[in-house]
Length: 174
Image (cartoon, rainbow, N blue to C red; front, side, top):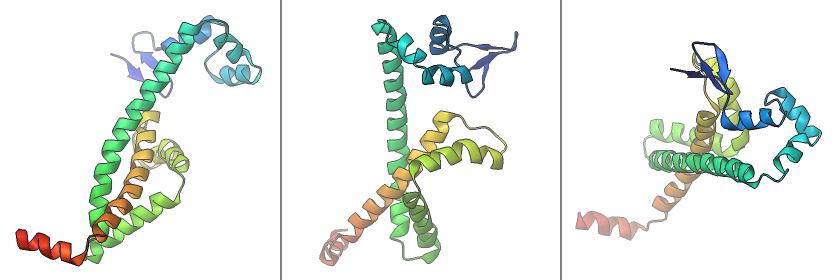
């Protein structure tokens, strides 16, 4: 039973961080994966260590990044498009108590940059709620809500583009 912090797992018996594979590889090359990593990157040591002829290591890092990107893509598409459909229907509602919150949601998330939303979910939201949010959850929340706002207007526009005769024909059929 381990628990995770922002950067790595903590083993409860020793109360010491358990290194991830990437952190262990960086330490093996003499690069501390903490704040020292930023200093080393500015001096070119990380680039030199990664480009030192170990293509397998580079491919593993690329595969890990690609897999993480694909996970975020799938989760945000499912959440964003589903929520966007609900919000888009809410934007088309005749009841102002449904239409107004949907319009505020769309306008807020469409008019703020998605990077600012992710940063807000990662750093500011944990101040307001009693639990910590990891980077994956913060990025999914930011991108999914942004996707929901944009897709809500797409769905609303699609519904509004249906001609009155099409609506009447649909009602006549049942």
